[in-house]
Image (cartoon, rainbow, N blue to C red):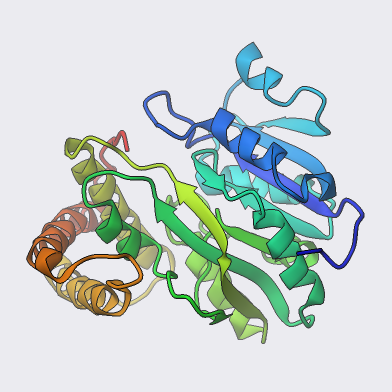
Length: 303
């Protein structure tokens, strides 16, 4: 597959909040995957955003690369992405999570799609799957619902597996960037309100870090539930109780499971375990949601 053009056009923005010592996919794996892209020569600039000073080991990862380091003390995940977006200058922007690993042809495929697309296509997104671990397939369905084999328009976008038109992303950016989850879904909705499109293609494949320790799952899902509660307050949407939120979430998860079970290769015999896992999931999320509604802080998590 050949991209339409051949010149460097991509601003690659890498956040570092997700680079944690215990994670199996770390910043080094991410950088190496980007260096090995079949279209790596089309990366115009590497923008690495960090909340603290980077050590020599991290800086050596970017030796001989056109890299800029942005120090943003205290900046969290979306705040780091917004800082990188503001500093970018390329016609296209890719936002890399430091704990995922794109397939070697990810950038080549994404550029071919977006360069040939009509102007109303603002972003192309792809299929993200968690690395192996306990209930990783069910968690993939919960957090990354795009797993189908056919391309098409979708309603949401993931911040870590997408290529954006630079002018659109620099203008809109992420709102509510102090909240750990939600700004990317909101961004897609704001794009679509302007008549812009988000296009999914299964050929854009990434693998995301996943824990091998079941005890870490609770804190991770509680954190997500807490973010759901914060987001509702941020957008001043009509509040609903944790129980009602959990029931709605459970219905959504079961519907996704029915739609994506085959794509995720979940056998029929496993479905009772999947149902039980999603019941556990909505309980954990409801706990985090209720903490947010009561003004309680998020719990620390190690996922």
